Length: 525
Image 1 (cartoon, rainbow, N blue to C red):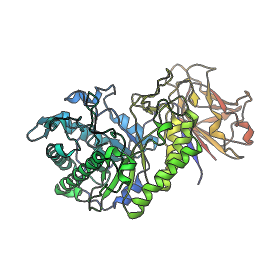
Image 2: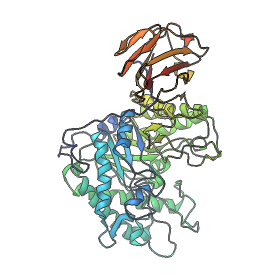
Image 3: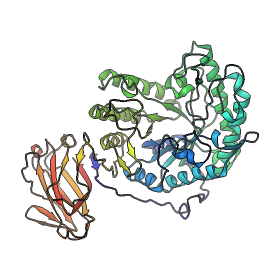
Image 4: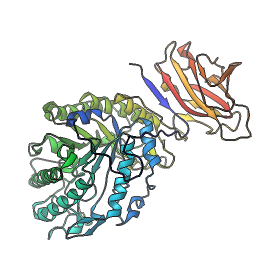
């Protein structure tokens, strides 16, 4: 199979509609019976993205909660940009406890449910798989009494009665609201259920983010989570329609691999269950702000071993697994993160486990602060801060990248004058994309006239890094080739440069344009 690497330099959105889904943001799709198995649904997911720190933000109790952690209000363009990039799975984390209007009935605010449904529908319209969950509803530890109803749930025996009432009530409403959606909608019972510390730093043990079978508290926590998972699954199934066969993801303690691999983890007796795991592995490289900036062979071995363990216990026994959260923080180590993304998703793919990157929009680490720098997608412009990471992930997942729009900044792969209104401004393309160049490899450019109506002449020139002009050969659509330049009088066009000697591009390329905006560039081996 040919490898395709795509990257673009300006916004270009694709809108994909499914019959019956358009015509309104809250139009419920027609009932189409779910006929796919859990394994088939998981196999159809390539690489995914999390709408992080958005619907899960819980600092307010009205619709302003969506933006209270600094994110923009989600738009249809945000979702379309993801789909256009080639990503076909979106995990939508949602917190519910702060949107309950009555703690006796746990009635979810109608405006909040409708807002969640609007965003889900946008993704379904774009033929994306959607994972909808119960996110920051894990209360903090109360050492003296049970948690309060408005706080959500907690995985200890003393909190079980309040927790089950909350979880069953919440999930009954969610399931009823979405019961007619097809297999593209997946439910996830809980997000990182754990012994969450209180504001004083108190917890019944020190394993909030880990799991140890020899710890009695860990075993109690896992037992509660097993029961919560089981009761939520029963609640969802009881609502009928497509919820009878909908895929449901279930986690272990803190969503760690160790918890689900432990003997105490229980999978409900149900044919449409997947195990949900969060895996920022190896921690030293992927998540530790003070950790390694280099992706080593030892790191590869750790990843390969963990994926094999998950596959051996679950996948090989017809229980699918997906990675609900993954990612590597930005430590100004783009090249090493490129390696990590490709290897991580390749190993996941080999073991039939789709991966979904966590994105909190915290991308800029040039101040030396690497903590929680899990930003990849610029939601305001629908561009990617680090396009190569998403390209590598999509390629490793076995799918062609789509329009991976470039965020222009120092250290990235491309620099450009976006609209082509100034002659002499050069666009540089980094050499590593052409590492596998051969004779007759092709570079395809998609261009269009710039937005300035005063500019009548449109021209583009191509050079190697030594400023030797390259002759533009190959096919041209809707344009004119003359004197080694491409001219585009008033319309969009594409042209192909065919590599005659791999040395031409080993140090990268330089493009100069006037009156032309670069939309997309692709390299084909």
